[in-house]
Amino acid sequence: MQKTETQLLGRFALSALMFVASLLLQATPAFAAGSDPRPRAAVVAAPQETEKQREAQLIEGAKKEGKVIYWDASTAKEWEPVFNKFRQKYPFLVVEHWRGGDDQIHQKMTAEARAGLHNVDFASTEINLIADLKKIGLMKKYHWPNTAEWSPQYKDRDGYWIASNINCAVVAYNTNLVSPAEAPKNWDDLLNPKWKGSISMEPDGGEWVLMLWAAWGKDKTVNYLKALSKNNIVFGAGSTARTEMLAAGAFKIDLRLNLHRIPEFQKKGAPIEWVRTDPILARATPRFIAERAPHPNAAILFADFFTSFEGQQAYNDASGRLMPDPRVKSKLAEALKGHRVVLFPIELAGQGNEADRIFREIFLK
Image (tube, rainbow, N blue to C red):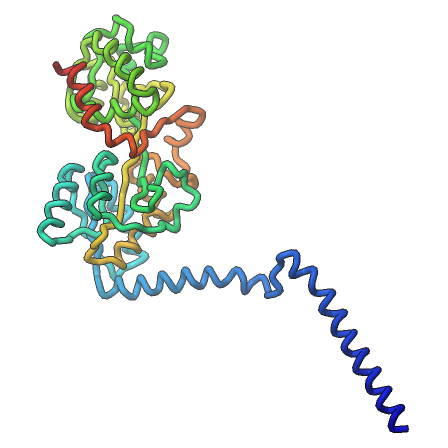
């Protein structure tokens, strides 16, 4: 009798083991296929929670810092709507905005750094000056989490800067003096002798040369500029001033006006129109976090806000500029659809001195 009970217990144990093994075998394919046995919500929630924790830590640090200092060449009118929305989100922070030219910002940052001073958190300067600031270590490397969907041409490959906006430099004409039928349609049309003495442009043309260089290469650019110079280009400083002069009829055509300002003048009744050349020339305006920002947490909060959809839309609404965030819809973005826009790369900025020399020798000798 004892032997029979032992045999039965042994058979029962073996059956139990086989049943458990069959369950494990049924579960194996799910793991082999790479699926996660945890509830889906748990998998998704972890990164979100991490981001919330990161922002909470930044907020805690920023509250102690109390402000963020921003240096830029743009007007307060363009930035105040952005600052207002930022302050609504982070009311414990004061925004100090110092406006200076791009060269001034570069000189101020480098001079203060040599003196061991660091008084800026977030700043902007033109793309031809960015490489130097990066080289001497005045820009913070950052992962810019809100820019994942941006085109690579709108951000530094190493993470040191992002393009806050894209400035298109376009050819424009006075519609009272030039009919749509006779207006230039492309770059070659500007070489027509009938425009001799009636075309204006900025005298500091090195950057414009680089834009053409990016589109055509150096040799074609030089040959084109030599042909263009035969039309006796007239020079006048300042894009806004030249837009006003073009609208007043001082010239028939201007070669390099800021596209985002033209709709403003058109709304006021100015008789100007821009030419849909192929390509349309453009440059990015980089912005960056200072490597030794005195308010590092506030600086990152501002950087994250500005690159968010809310910040990008606020800046577009206030400035009319073309934004790198593809989610931002604007009349300017719509107007550029179907047209080739060429942005000159930062690598070409190293040829700035050569571009200046080319422009001076062709037009200002």
